[in-house]
Structure formats: C-alpha cells, structure tokens
Image (cartoon, rainbow, N blue to C red; front, side, top):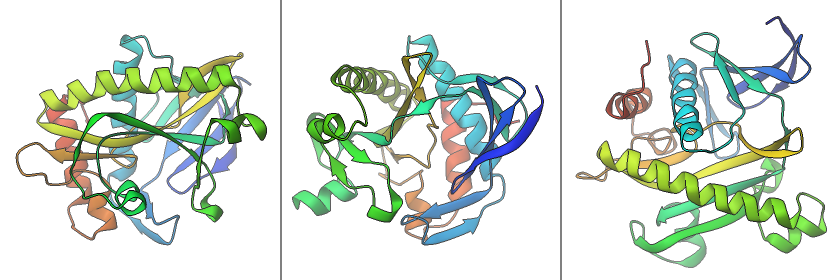
Length: 237
C-alpha cells in the first residue's frame, strides 16, 4: 500500500491518501494537546502507544459485532483504515460524573450514574465543541434520524463491551467520546479510542490513567497509558 499526500493534519494524528481510493493511512504522532489546542507538548512513545492501543480496542469491538474503520496495523505509528465520510459530531457516554458535566450541572465528581448518559457535541474547536441535540443534527443536515438512533445504539453496545473489559483490568471507565462516519453508506466507528479520548480511573485509588494526567500536570502521562495497555493485555512491542 503506497502512502501518498497528507490529506488531513489534526492535533495528534495525520491522515494520508493511498493508491486505494477507499483506504487511508492514519499516522499517530507524539503531539499531545488539551484545552482545544491551547496546551501542546511532545511526549515520547505517545504515537506508538495510542496507535497500538486503538488497534487493540477496535479489534475487540469488531469481535463484539461493532463495525469499525480499522484494517491493518502497518507500523508502530501507522495503521491502514477505511476512508470514511465523517459525521461532524461527537458521541459522549458517561458512567461516572467528571469533567464538563460537573461544571454544567453543578454535580460533584465521581458520582456513579444510575444508567449511562449519552450526549452529542458538535465537533468544532473554535466553538469549544458545543452540546447539540437530535433536532440540531437533523435540521442542519449533520445526520439523519436513522443515523442518530444507530449511533446511540452502537455507543451503548460499546459501553457494555469496554466497561466490562476495563473493570476486569481494575479500571473504572468513567466516560469517553466516539466518532462515526459512513463507508459505502453504512455507519462505521472511526477516529480512535485511546486514553486521549476517555477517562479511566483505578478502581482502588481513583487515580487517573488518561489524558487528565496531561491536563492537570500530574506527570507520567505515557507511563499511565502504558499501564492501562499492560493490564488489558494490549501488546505495545
């Protein structure tokens, strides 16, 4: 598979065209950002860790019947993926209160929710990813009712799979974001699932093993990611 021109450069990943019009190469860089790109650093091993972590998680989800864009691991930092037409929204599932929901609703951090919550956010850094609802998505043409229903169903199915997997490894899956796109007209899970886009707390200590270590200057960011990988059985070498 020949890598061609860079198609997109995000805050932590680059996407390249290939000689197959339906396939892309995703490159995970060592760049780490927070607060809509206001805080940026380079962290050694970060690209490799997130690439292999994401590939491992996506394959676990595929085994559970979740369609993903993942194709083939190419190198430590690169993976071959299906070329999706991404929907411009993020799906956020929460099992425990943390982050923005605490600020918005005035609730304390660490409350275990009676049932998981689901929220949509518009993917727009300039607007700080505002929260939107089903009506906005349909009215502005960002997605259809059928796609909305499918995204919700897939997100909760993913929650069932990953919540148990992380629980078995001694972690609480606090919350996470997902992005979906279309491949040959079918809804498919895209982007990535890594400690960059979720919150994972140790069950005993409530210590963070995710990007909050970077946001809050707690240190040992990649060491935390690597510990999660080790506990869930994700090979990094």
